[in-house]
Length: 146
Image 1 (cartoon, rainbow, N blue to C red):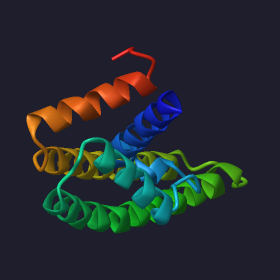
Image 2 (cartoon, helix red, strand yellow):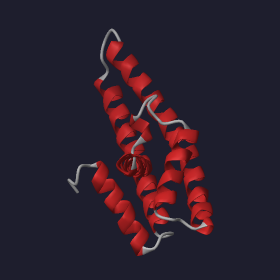
Image 3 (cartoon, rainbow, N blue to C red):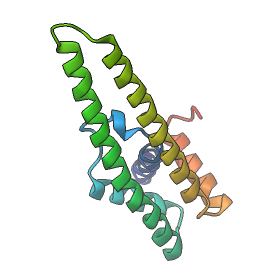
């Protein structure tokens, strides 16, 4: 029972960490439901005994990021549609494909910049001890490979 709780908590933290650093622009339809993300994050916050203030401040950051991730995801979908059309055209326009590539790299850069900004912002809310607990949870989920 305890092992199962620890594994779920580790998975939750890993999901939260991935969520904050992932590139939703490339995630397609795989972006988790916001309510699922909230539940997973709350499990992590519970595991590190987050204070009410830490939770409130973290959710201020996360709620804004979730909306931005949705926007990045939508932009990524539009780029994939453009690329699909460009590659299915009777004559492939290499300049259009390069333009799509440039736009995709730009989107990736913006999304990862936002993800790391969020990750650091949330990390700053927690004590060094809590951050270490989060790291250990992530390591446990990852099989101790980090």
